[in-house]
Image 1 (cartoon, rainbow, N blue to C red):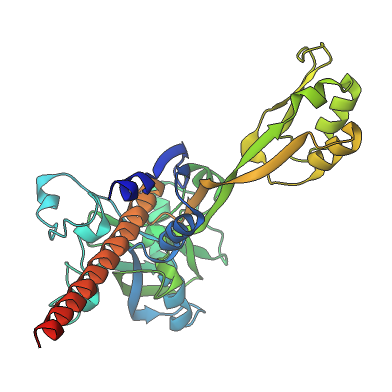
Image 2 (cartoon, rainbow, N blue to C red):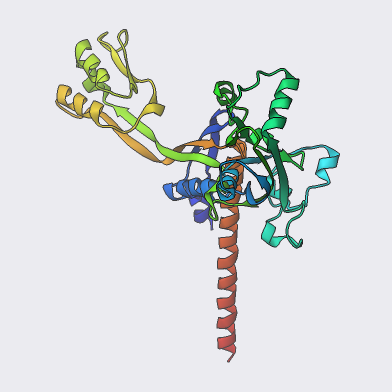
Amino acid sequence: MASFESAKRRPSVKILDLQEDQIKFEMKNTDVSVANALRRVMIAEVSTLAIERVEIYSNTSVLLDEFISHRLGMIPIRYTYNESADHKERLIGQTQYPEGSLMRRFVENRDCECEDHCWRCSVELDLKVSYDDKQAEMAMEGDEQDEEGTNIVVTSADLKSNDDDVRAITFGNKEDEANSQDKGISILKLAAGQEIELKAIAICGIAKEHAKWSPVSACVFRFNPIITMDKDVLDRLSLEQKREIVESDPNKVFHLNEQGGSFGKGEIVVAKPEDCTFCEDVVVKAKEIAGEECISIRPDMNHFIYTVETIGSLAPEQVVKEGLHALKYKMQELTNHTAAIAEDQQLQGQGAAMN
């Protein structure tokens, strides 16, 4: 038992960079199978809200109902945890999920006791926009009205939720918002005399069922590089030779400190290990100049750097928390099932012995 405990790994996670729609973190002391399992879970097994059903009451635009429904389904829907007493009353008590998790507030629609949908398993979003009303609204707000004959854009900002904690995403970050000409994600355009009125129903799901429930647009990891240099060999090279080696690196991982080195002939140092792509250009060039191997680059198979970009349905750090929780839950389920199988086999063995 003691040897097993000493052999157990103790994975650790450290956040390197956190932005509105992106997180970069490292995970150490584990192997590539666990690292890839976490990546796959964050992509396909973290629950989010997405529009699943659409009831269209009026559509005089040029787009078909089915086309509009598909576009609505791909709009990220975000739930924001609210700590106020009124909102806490709506939590349904699934405490096995992390605090602030979507699944503490909602249940899967298929598991709900309601006949079709209710506040426990879904959110309704209304969309009612007409060209004439939009023009009148712009006039009242003092905005510049569109010229006659031009179209107006209906965006995700026009979707009105019946739940204060849930809203349709307009922009993933402030930079996108500043650079956009619209007020949100474009759904359709309306010309003079046209209108759209519908009700959309968003439910929980995972990307294993449909990609619209995936919380990420990109989720990748890479190995942390282990770079070693033979300083005895490198110190014998001239300043020009060292400069030639550094300049052969396309990713600028290495830097030449011209004032360093044992003999004052410069020193090659690792400046940006995070930019390493394990290319062999520097290794080959250094061997060609020095006549022997003096620089080696290899991946650390127990140290991984993740980059996760989200679409807005969940905060980046929440995606990581939910992914780690889902992975831990799977491991616990596996442990429980194997223990149950072992117990059954033991009981069967005892029964056979008694007979």
